[in-house]
Image 1 (cartoon, one colour):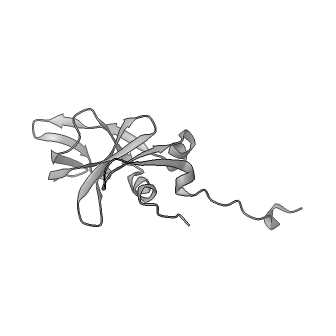
Image 2 (cartoon, helix red, strand yellow):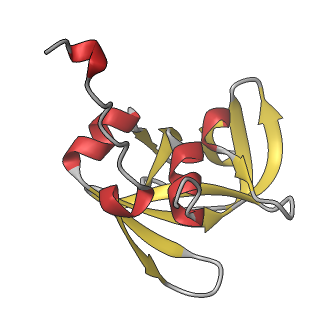
Image 3 (cartoon, rainbow, N blue to C red):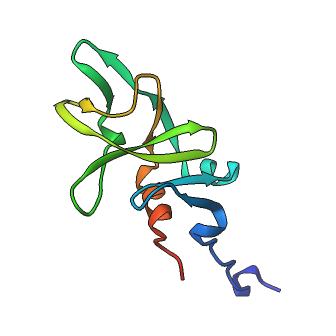
Length: 125
């Protein structure tokens, strides 16, 4: 039998690769499998602090449909939670935050958009 004639495997749904727990009406805790984190290419860095305030990479910033800014924190391995931020200033590839996660908290810099899709159930049937 030729492999080209075989049916393609069905892609996993967002709910089969993630556990979603509602923390409140607007926020969820997303728990992924090791394999899902690897496949999504999620990368994280800790929030840093300068004399101007909290600093995060610009790539961590996500906006919701209402225009509110947030980042995904990574409070423990495989767990991701949305955290609201207020941008004070943009400095090239960095953001200085007026409000956000505490210094040292790990945030997602690559893969945040995919996490949002999982949180919102995009791709479910």
